[in-house]
Length: 205
Image (cartoon, rainbow, N blue to C red):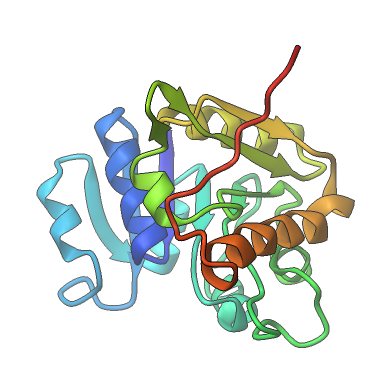
């Protein structure tokens, strides 16, 4: 896949490395290609840095992992997203998000052309994206969104990042639920003292 990553911090940088290792073409969308967080990623032949609009136009999938309060501004900077998939990995934390929205994915939908927006990779810490395996068990992820092709892309990329399963929890009406689930992990990890080395696994019998 050709993937534009908008936000090259802990989450975006970690997943860029995973996906490049699996042979995906990664286009980092940056404001200054000579100076950005994660510049060491360019040591991988499958990763290059481009201005944001160029990265978007060169890609089929746009992965967004930027501060939630900037989501409207950055979504508007993407240019024409017609026909592209946007995967939203963001959460509104401590009320710091786009004015008038309870989740970032709805804000993206209101400020872009594509309807293929899904939320995924937001329910766990970047440490679990770097290494999702606990002992002999790989963690699971979750995805929400009306877009079938968006869900399929997110599930495939979750597998390529080392997660065992990625379960669909519903459509666009579950965007807020996904962010609440993220808060559940944050609460346990940060506020209840469990630490970041925890993750979720769905068991069946």
